[in-house]
Amino acid sequence: MVAELSPKLIAEVQRAAELLAVQSRICILTGAGVSAESGIPTFRDKQTGLWEQYRAEDLASPNAFARDPRLVWSWYQWRRQLVHDKKPNPAHHTLAQWQQDAIENKKSFTLITQNVDDLHEQAGSMTTHLHGHLWRNRCHDCGTPYPNKAETLDSNKKSINFDDSLISCQQCSGYIRPDIVWFGEALPVQAWQTAENAAASCDVFISIGTSSLVYPAAGLAQLAQQNGAKVIEINPNPTPNTIVDITLAANAGVVLPLLMQKMAALT
Image 1 (spheres, rainbow, N blue to C red):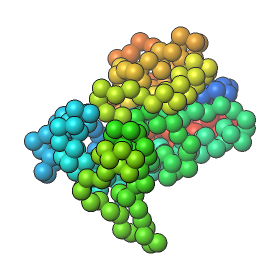
Image 2 (tube, rainbow, N blue to C red):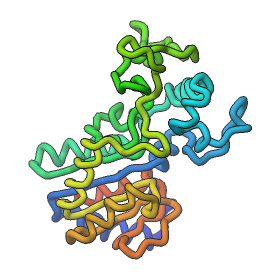
Image 3 (cartoon, rainbow, N blue to C red):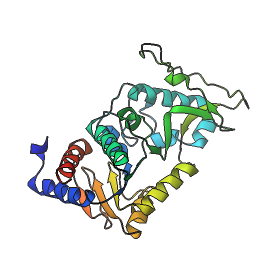
């Protein structure tokens, strides 16, 4: 895989490694590009099958759920079927190892994600989720968490219930929905505070598999840069952003293992 990288890109990876090797406070933001390398469709991908007539944006909103809760719930159960068997890729595993090494060496390493899957956790990372969790449910009306039938596994972890029948809250009788941040909803306060604090106090901020232009998450890179941090972007399709100091234009699953290898050689 490394042989596929250009000499220029390998040189940039080396430059990033030299920067990271001497810093002790790292903040990382991951987006859909990281999960896409595990085969999970991005939110912007064209819908397929029964959902071709819909745009994702028209289904992921409080108004859509109020208008037709069964439709929205069915769509999320379908999405869960798409991703339930997906596994972490080398990017997830490298970030988990990097975080573990940082903890052992008493360094600060905060991993924040815009993704709603659990691939970071499957790889062993402790992760702050800005947009919620696909495998968790809560009441749409009162917010009470609901034990997730969609994630109920048998003893062999082979059967998952993807029933699309609506579920009512035992507290208020409202409908159960995925615990995901929809269009028009605020980010979870605690998660956003964690992200802001990490970005404001880090030495290096790394954006992986996500645009550095979409707010509010894009504001984290700006916050880091304003407080003296260097900004690295890992993305096969880099965004035109003047605050980025180092751009690694390749898939995270290829670049991150090489980056960690080069960092190890410097310590």
